[in-house]
Image (cartoon, rainbow, N blue to C red; front, side, top):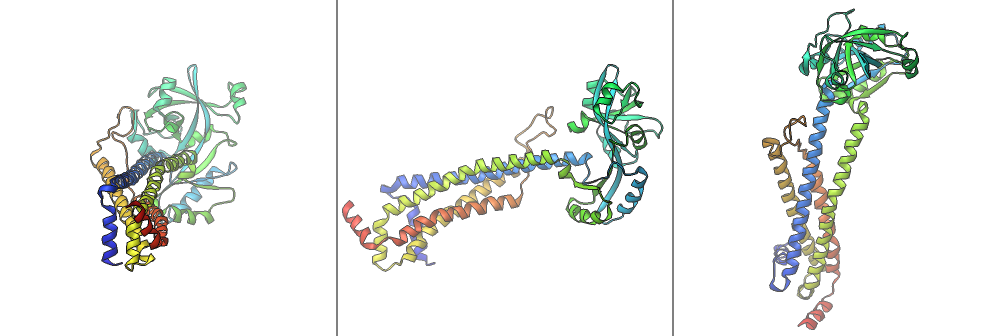
Length: 412
């Protein structure tokens, strides 16, 4: 591309006295695309920040992978599979778990809970110890029946450490209603109260010794699991591929995303909808850029006619308008990307958009800048600006010099 074409393209972008309105429209289109790119990067970074925060909260208690055995699976066989799996590469820990629904009673109050039985030396109890608000997370050995409950559940039943409560488990809800006085029940003592900052655990879960849960939960309703944590999240897929051929028929192997599918799908939907709505700003600005280039073509017809008369080809004229859209596309994507990235990075460093720590688990609005998001937004916007300039460029290239000179003669 010759220097003459670049010179003419830059000249067309500058303001002339009779065409300042076009220059104003060009500035507005440029600003609109820049704001749109900036907003897209910021919105995607906010969703990335919340997703990483929620992922961190979920993985405090949830495993990376969970193996769920069928109800007929014998509990004694868990040790065999635990020993078989825990030495595979990429696996940090394998924890046997038994879980099921039960009814927790305290005086005249009761609450349906998910009873979770885990070995006292597992990493889960170490995490519970770090989130404890009262009592102790160290369970005495079986047969002492002790419970660790969430703070919301403790408030609902007015339970404190050392208080007593009763757990009833049945196969169906009807058994709770009609047969629970004669049904199996165990007395438990509250060992500690934790705050997981996750209502699935704070309001609905109770942790106890594996043997205690196995004793109270009916075989028909309890579920036996192996909870697996990987050394790194990047190894999750390879670990899952290694586990598939080792498991018996009827076993389910699920990732943490599948364990929280509804929440994860809602987050993805919100991200997609927000991305689509903010993208409308970019699309409108790009359409206005197309209109600006058509107006520029209209007022520059005499000059284009003169250029063609003195020897400029249609390809040269097309290159001029494509170069204009290239200048605008590169300028808008670069400025929008820099502004959006700078905004997100400043929030990550200084946290100047605060949140109330009494109501939220973080003190500032979480943001996470992903380079692939910036590249995606900038790349798509740049391509759309080039497409927006291609139609006016083809129209300018198709213009014949005689019509441009006739137009110049009419307006003179």
